[in-house]
Image 1 (cartoon, rainbow, N blue to C red):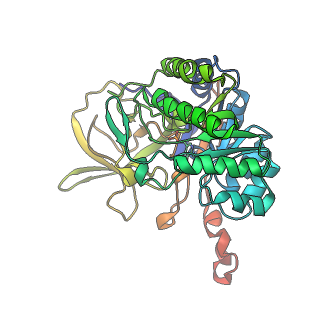
Image 2 (image 1 turned 90 degrees about the vertical axis):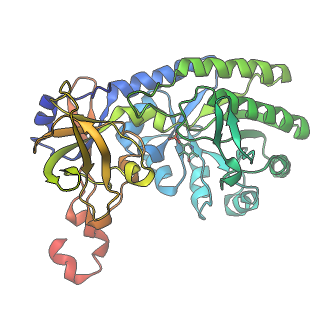
Image 3 (image 1 turned 120 degrees about the vertical axis):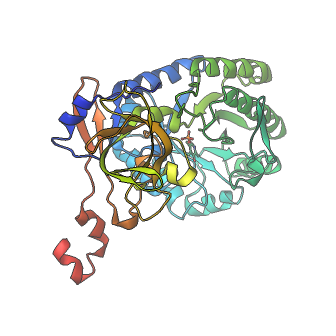
Length: 420
Ligand SMILES: *Cc1c(COP(=O)(O)O)cnc(C)c1O
């Protein structure tokens, strides 16, 4: 059973000033989770979580995470600018880009970000663009198939990211020649996994590589970035990841592999997105139509523009009908949005209580890769984002888009001026 962090009464109060649809985030739960992650890795003095900005790019939320000791992981110019605006500075930003456009390494270097090179050819690119900083990270791809105890998990061999082991060695040597003094290793091999052995297994891969790289090049490895990928329980029957246990298992591997190699000073970094925010966001929508044809449909006032994961990946997002939490789920619906796209369905053949027009529905676990993935197809506008604060009050942290915003880049077009 998944319980929303909002009641129908609260939503009825909110919609007086901010109509549905909207995304809302739970500050208290975000802070508690961030503290738990810190606790899990408290054994490592240099530990830092660099929140993957792409998951939920909102400055108010970044500020909350900053207060909890997190940095940011950026992969584009706009994300770097947002991190800068919120006040993240030297040592608080990872720049894990790929196919990096010209100009972004310069910005990252100016901000004192850790630059994470996706490829060996980025070394001359970086050097030519702005010169190499004293600390550089390189992204590793072990190739092949990445297996965990419970079976095959993913195929790094098919992924566009990272360097081969030979390239890691060659890259480190080149960077040493260019004056780099401290190094990082980064790798992201499995996405959205609730398998608790993922981080410990990845840690063993990367710690072993770190020892090899140190032996081969003499380089000082300052940090190892386990990156993102820890999943969340989207389905009510899924088990949440016990992060304290994960941290403890990583510690064991650290003591087994790095400490005997004289590398006990390595800092562990993470770059989690989904795990930090996913469960702590809801998309709140309203049932505005019902339709009875070959199936039963409930049409809501949001669409895939507000949450793309179901349309894009067939992802499951749990739905609660507010005020009917305890009612029997004796109806079967497709809950659909208004796009002219048949995959615009938040739920398919979902058992739910009887839904009446005007009911508010909470779509769960939209705190990461939710609002952020939105687009403007069909001329649909992006929603507001709200924050449920620790004192129970609600703050708007992004206003809803207006027609004017949508047409803003057509200001060069005189016919559109009546709408600008
Ligand atoms: C997307 C991404 C993350 C965050 O991934 P989650 O699955 O949200 O944890 C971290 N690092 C990099 C480089 C990414 O591209």
